[in-house]
Every structure is written in structure tokens, then in C-alpha cells.
Length: 225
Image 1 (cartoon, rainbow, N blue to C red):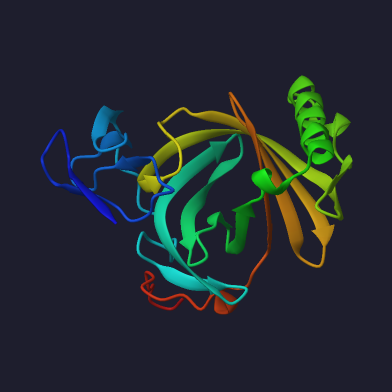
Image 2: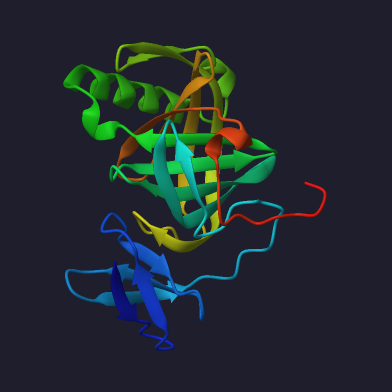
């Protein structure tokens, strides 16, 4: 855990994990990036509107028997709605996200660095094809790709944009950050997601999970929920 004074208001900004390089001051909403031994202000972030999510920064839980803690969030928008991406760090130091939309929970972890040369080329080729047809995604629906000894099928492609962010994140997430997200499924609740960014493509693997199986603590409770 590393602490810095906010360059704008002087309040304490805490980095709970070395994985995070970006944070939003919880008091004045100043966005900062971390350097070797300091932080630098890069702008302001508007407060995220309240929603009915049970998760919050500080929520803890378990995924496949491994404890994790939520340290940040991005609110992602697309043409038909929005969803939350909660940044979580597990006790085995993996970098993951818990996607949440309409009562569905989908924890996943970044596996990009685990891919071999053939898989990386396949991801880049698929990303190029999706980018070419991003305004007519029907042309890529059903396309398959082999990743880590499993075959996944594209079920959805979205042009996504960051509406806002809070807490700690592994990259800069200002309002307006644009990506293309590819959702893929394998079966038995397993899924993969490919994020096509400005400079790089990232691959995530995970599974759709029931709320009770996450065994969460320090979550938001809603009457009658």
C-alpha cells in the first residue's frame, strides 16, 4: 500500500496495489497517474451517478476459491445502455475485472501475457476484422477463435466508451476513452472478452457466476434485495 497527498486538495490518495497506475481522488475527483515515487495530476473526473449496484470499492469476495478485493470501477456506455466494470485484485496478484449488468456477474482475468505467438496473431487478426466491420457486426457474429486450448465463438461486439471512473485502475480511464469489446462464449458458463484499444488488444477469460457463489462482504445492501 502506497499513500500520496492529492496534488489538488491535499487529501490522501491510497494505492492498495502496485498493479494500479491511475487513481481518482475520492474527495475532489482529481485524476492522477503514478510515477516511480510521486503522482501527477491529469485532470478532473465528474462524480459517477448512483446506481443499484451491490458492489463498491472495498467489497471483497471469492472467485474459484481465491479471495479478491475491489479497488476501482469504470462505468462503460454503449448505444443501448451501460454497465459497470469493477477492477479487482486477487490474493494471487492477478489483475481482473468483475463485469456487472442487469443482475449478471462475470469475473474475468487478463490472460494476454499467457498467450503464445499463434494466439496473439489470431487475436490481432480478429481485432482487425472486427474493426473493419464494427458498424456491421453481423459480418463477424459466430466467428470462432482458439485461445488457451479452448475454442470461443463471438456472440456480441460493442463500441464502448468510458462514462467515468473511480478508485484505482491499471490504466488511465478518462471520460470518453473509447474501445471496441468482443464478447465470446465457449459453453458451461465460460466466456472470453477481447478489448480493442487505441494502442493494444487485451484478452480476458472468466465465467458467469451467481451472486451467492462470490461470497461477498462489505457490499451495499438494499432493502428487499
